Image (cartoon, rainbow, N blue to C red):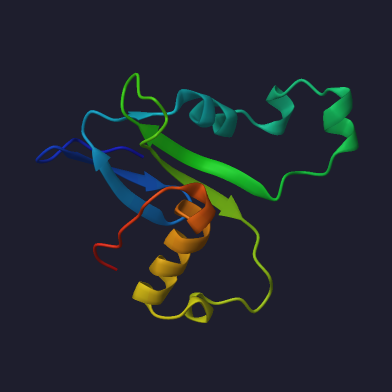
Length: 119
């Protein structure tokens, strides 16, 4: 669910109890939106679909700047987790955020540089 922009930001509330804000000019990814709106009956079955199990990871929402180059965007991905997992297992917010930067966003071998501003 989208809301009216306020002070250059617009809020998005997902059906799975999450909420975030994006810059007012950013657009919702239409491919993700339509894929989520289509139920299983709306999708044409193919040979590959019949052989595979349902995906364990699903993109729920995605936003980015109009005519962007895909370098700057935000996506919400829904995935099953192991039984008993808690966010506390990741450590305090600063430790968890730094681990994310160091292992997924800008690992040493990537040549990317990331700086944690706040957690």
